[in-house]
Length: 160
Image (tube, rainbow, N blue to C red):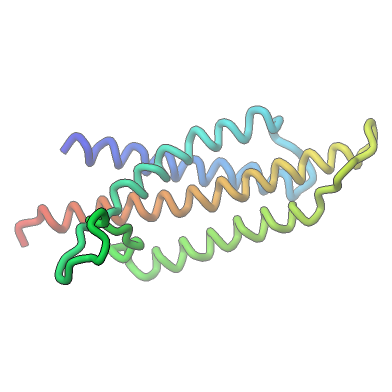
């Protein structure tokens, strides 16, 4: 019971991190930097990474049936198939959106911006958007895998 509550809390924090990244990327796309990179990216990482790690760790499954060829493989990671199809589709669209935001920012990063120029501010915004795009995509994956684990646990404990 307690572990499910912790996983639920980490899943909610991961979702908050996804929304945080989306809000900041929306501001960056409008041409303004709502927060400095030194604040925005560490806060996003602190919100997203624990839920992602928990989703990956808890979404392991024991191998059944035929024995594996390697003696040390006892569990495998499984995709979040317990989620409804609409949730999987929404997660896929969200990951794609974060990926496009990150890659389009990566394309605009210059090797050596001129100091004191507007190009340097634009460079910082591109770097921040790239980092937030990566963290947002990771957060969507963490939210989906943790939610799938919670659904699987709920179904396995249900008397029906």
